[in-house]
Image 1: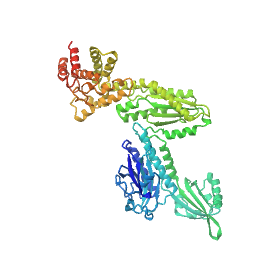
Image 2: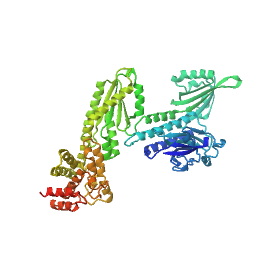
Image 3: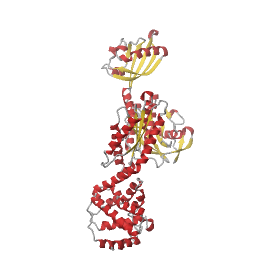
Length: 637
C-alpha cells in the first residue's frame, strides 16, 4: 500500500510504501510500554509533547501521545497528507529531522504544527522489518529545543526498541503474544558545578552540587576535592584528568564519586581549564548525576534481552552471548536446539492462551534441566536454544536425555510437553560457531521429522481422551459410531482403505467439540442462539486439528463436511449433493441415527424403527437419498 506525502523541505510530493492491512495489531503490552517511554521522554528532555505518529493511506494520525498536561495533541487526531507536517518530511526522506525554531526558518514557518505553537521539532522514522513505513516518533515544543547528543541517542534507542517490537510482532506465529515490558529510560539528571584552582582546591560550588553531594560550600572551601568526593579506586584517574585538562583544556568522561553519606554515584563529568584572577589557572567542573539513568539503562538492557512470555532470554541476547562465549577457554561448546511439537494443534484446539501455557511449561522444563552458567533463550515461536560452555557432545546428549525424561512425565497432563531436540559441539577453535548452530538445528529438524507423526497422533488422541472426560456421552457416541460405520461400510462394499477412514471418522468426527465448554456439551435444556453458534464451529475446529496430523489428515475434509445437508442447507460451507464428500454423507446418516436412538442431555431416545422412518422422511433433504435407502435396508435386515 502506498501514500503520497508532501516533503516541505524539498517542496514536492513523494510516494512511499506504508503499513498494509496484513500487519498485526499492536498488542496492549507494547502500547503500555511505549506509553511509559513517551511519558519518560517528556520528563527527561523537558519538552511539551512526545508522540508516536502512524501514517494511513490518506492521513497521518496521533497513535500515542505523552500524557503531560502541556501536550496539545489528542490520540486519534488526524491530518490529511499533503499539509506539509514535520512528520511528512521525516517519512518522505526516511531520516531524522531537527527543526530548532520553525519561526526562524522560511521553509517551516507556516507548517500546521506552528498553529499549535509547536515551533521546535525532532523526529525519526519508524519502519516495519520489511522497510514499509509505520510512522514516526517525535518530540515538539513551544520553545527552542536544544538537543544534546544523548537526547538524540535516547530517541534513536527508543526508535530501535519500537522497531524491534514490530519485528517481534511479525515473527511470532502465536501470538505473541506475546508479552514483552520496557519501563526504561534515563531519569532527569542533576548538575553540580564547582570551581577549583589547578591543585583541585575548591573555590566555589553551586547549590546543585551541595544537594547532590551533601556538602555545604563552607565545608569544601579551600580544601582539596580529593579528600571529600573521590573514592580510593578513582584517585589515579582523578589526577590523570587534572593533568589532561591542564594540557588539553577539557575532559569529558563518566566517573564514580561518593557523597557525604558514603553513597557511590555515577556522573557524566565535563571539565574545562579556565583562567582565574591574577593569571592563575583554574578548573571548572560540571557533574551531571547519571546514577538513575545508568540504572534505567541497565533495566532497558535487561528487558530488551528478555522474552516477555517465558521470561527467558531472547534471540538477541542469545546471539550476543554466543559470540562472547566463542573462545578457546570455553571449549568444547555445545548447542542444543529445541522445537515444541504440536503447538499448532494446541492453539487450534484450545486457543493461543493454552499454547502460551505450553510454551511456559516447556521453558520451565528446559530451565530446570540446565546449569546456571548455561544460556537458555527462546528463539521465537516454538523454538528454544541452549548454549553449553565447556560441555562435550556426550554431556550434551545426557542433558537431552534428562529433558526427554521430564517431558515423558507430562504424558498424562492435559498439556503434554513434547520437544524435538538436536545438538552439535564445537571442539576446535577454528570451527565456526554459526555452523555449529546450523548443525544443531539440522539435527533437531531430522529428529522432529522422525518423531513428528507419532507425536502429533499422540496429541490428537490425547485430545480425544480430554473430550471423553468432558462428556461420557461423547465417548460412547464415538465408539458406537465407529462400529456402526464399519458395518455400513462393509454393506456398501467399501474397500479396506475406505473402511479404515470411515471407522476413524466415526471416532474423530466430533473432535472439534474439544473447544466447547462442558456447560454447553452437557446442557439438558435447549441451546440458546449464542450457544448453538459455538457448537456449529466444531466441524471447522475438527478440520484444523485433523489437518495438523499426517495420520488424520485423510479424514479432515470429511470432518469439516459431516454436518452438511444434501439440499445445501447444512454448515459450515452449505455444500450440496455430490459436492459433499462421500464418507461425510455416510457418517451424517450414522450420526443422526445414533443420536436419535440414544438418550442425550436434551432429549429422550426413540426406537430404531422410529429413527429409520425419520431418516426415510429426510432423504433428499438432509441425507443422500441413495445412502439413506441403503442404510435403512441394512438396519431392517
